[in-house]
Image (cartoon, rainbow, N blue to C red; front, top):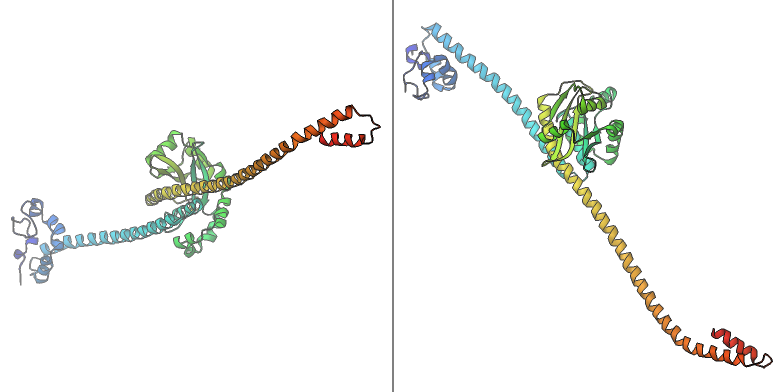
Length: 368
């Protein structure tokens, strides 16, 4: 049976090279037994083999050392549990990122992109905000204007929606998109969206857009942030800019209007990531819709051009006919002028009693 003198982990100090897992320059481990046990021994197979073979004649020292070791193991176990939970959360979060990104990339219209973005921000698998508002930047007026909102209108509606959590999963909510659903959701918040007009030129909003970061607003005292608080009816909300390079694209306002829960840092981080992805999708949708309008205008102009060409051809034909008529008129005009002139001369020297006087008058009149 081994004795405690055989075990390096029971020694107060070690000599360099006495433990193969401690380098000579790691003086802190050589001189400090507790630090050595926590940092090295609990990871050493020989340590546990020694415990199984040790002679318990020196019980107090062995007990003290084992207490240190098992305290360290318990601490590491708690850390591992915490890390595993965190890993599970982040793994699910990355899955949500992937699902949202795939959905945004396939969005065909601005409406669909806006709907997917706000669903990701409000669904329980995402940031789980109660409500979210999307404002788009108007380059002509330099204003952010309310475009779309999603979430329950009041506590009664929230209760009806949230009592079926399976119906609030990301995939199901995204798959439900339609123009009719979009209009229905927007109509619920029409009075708020109509008044959500925020000037970009204010220092506060300009700084938020420039930072490209999601921020938590709590009990704003004055200015545009206080105005937003009054419009949405809550003292705490998150504000996240949508940008393309240094250009503003829009703003997202999200809150926990129904539950009143404080906005957590993780929700802000998720909102910030979604804002970045949403900026790309919304800008692409805006370009696509502008392209569609341009294509429709080109089609309209092509149609008008074809009609114009038809009219030109018709006019060219009419011009050709007019030239022919002019030529024919010219060919008739000369002899008729002579006939009419001669008839007039004859009439001037002829009495009305002349048998053919009336015929001469008819000749002159017809020639005229």
